[in-house]
Length: 167
Image (cartoon, rainbow, N blue to C red):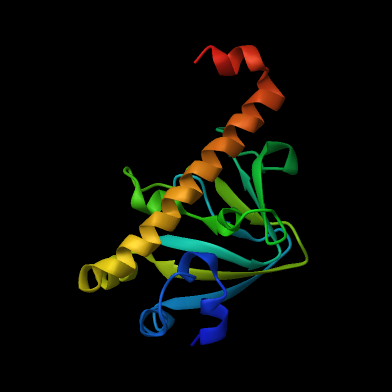
């Protein structure tokens, strides 16, 4: 079982009280990945929320002809050292239809420590404790906004401001 002090230190759970964190403890698992390991694939069912605790993860698109992906296809990187607490969360697609992963995720440091929790477990907790759900979803709104701004920056850098303002 994951240590309570680890969970208390994770941004998605920072506003929760001790009892709420204890409820989460049995639902979370910590997984270690090595450089080059794939956490999940584009178009997988989005069943989990992923939180990067240590290391860095690249989010990449996959080519249709099934060629191996490379760092050139990285749309975004997620690093623990990155500014903003929203930078560490992956898999928010589990809360948004059609509940599919939009990109693939790869460990790009020697090791990555990831905390993973099933969306269905989270939702059950939130049904029993609506304040817990509110605190968590308030945080997730910040994550989505953060990712949208990162995407805008990526588009502006790589495709030009004319394309961005022509939406």
